[in-house]
Length: 298
Image (cartoon, rainbow, N blue to C red; front, side):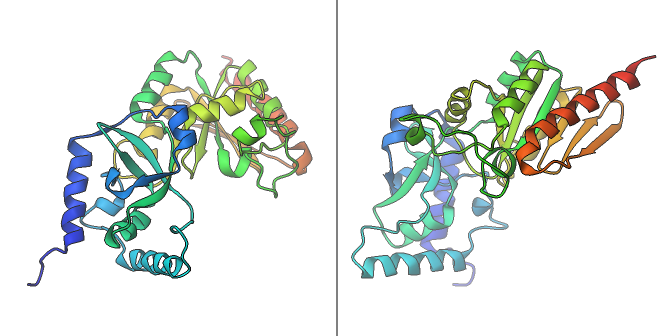
């Protein structure tokens, strides 16, 4: 009959409703995050804020079919299961996990009747976490920096910071760009809150621990994944911006200061080679502060 739903569409609708009305995210313990590498498909639930669950957009069944072909290919070679990137998930109350990234892989596994699928549990920041941080902060200035392309070593943005000693080099797989600890220390000493932005999902508590090994602190992490709810990156960014008198955006090529109340915009291009990037950023921020102080004088 035209317009009738498939069993998977009905299943997705039911799962989305349950996830929206009968569960909420909670923090997973360090032990659970370290030891859990797979989960039963029936304990994974879709994220109602994701476009995958939006009836107007919905799943891309071509992508799902492609994953199903990959799964069948794996089975034909007698492997245990598809060993691609694990699904990023967060712990749910009362039970199970909410999918953050990997809905189509999960859908393929469910449609094929698979029992388990690889996962990676993360504790992401939600609106309540951000509100608490902002309420506790006494700073009026923010540094906003991309974690993936600017702070972490990409192999193309210059030398790396010295690797952590064993066993921390195994515990944390991230590698810092050279000069980042010195830059962060400068920002901290000059009363900046440091907000990082990422296109990936990280556990913020783990990220904090990682930076503390380099004797610096970060204030918060906002994920730029596309989400439709108020907890998406746009809603969180607006909340954060309203807290601070001004923001300096730091990237690989420039430092930009924005002061909304004064309707001011300042930009300093970074002309140093990658080896001198952090020093150039510190000099640019210092210049911007001096220019702002001069402009504020009556």
